[in-house]
Amino acid sequence: MICATGIGMTIAANKVKGIRATPCHDSFTATKSRSHNDSNVLVMGAQIVDVETALEIVSIWLEEKFTGGRHERRVREITQIEEGTLDV
Image (cartoon, rainbow, N blue to C red; front, side, top):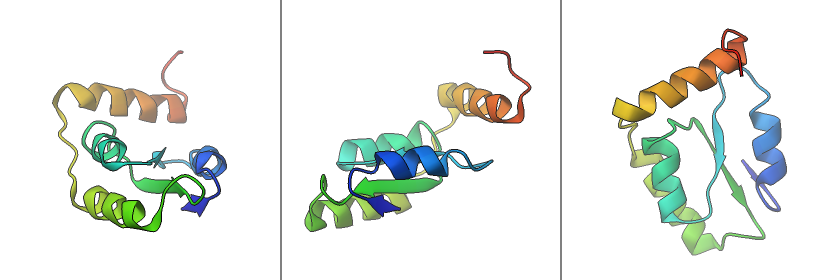
């Protein structure tokens, strides 16, 4: 998803059950959004990210895999919050 900053689209997308949208503005955030948070929707800001960087982000984001391990607990808790089964 793309909007001016990526912020509004991220907020809106994360209202949809099962979505873990993350705004990415460089290779580091693209990598971590997938490997640590199992992001399933990529969001970028057109006024933040230039075309060359956007292409790099998309490539990394599509190829990066969720590493699981210590990060599985966080993703599971996010899902439980969404389902209303975790007290926060």
